[in-house]
Image (cartoon, rainbow, N blue to C red; front, side, top):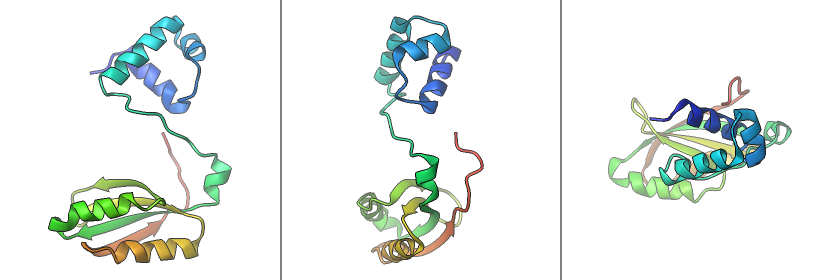
Length: 142
């Protein structure tokens, strides 16, 4: 369970993981040492496992993003995951319940590239069926 202070720190880090300790301390109303200590504890507890890059909206608007729902052969699921991990356009992979087994979120630089990527995913050994939806806009991104 996270304290309110830890939740507030995580919220600020989600907005800007590169914010300086001094900036975080100012926004939280605590010392830099306190912020650094909290970050180290969150890392040691495995709550923070890394830091990432957020792309500029102007850059992302030029990409074609899609959700690809997959039905996979259960015995080949690990092989499918390894194959998807090797594809640079794959941003996230979720195991899900329901009619499909996985949801893959992909980025492509064009519709043509997306079409080729979808063919590549569909041709993977263990992928039985796919259903894709192109994302037109993102209304909330936290």
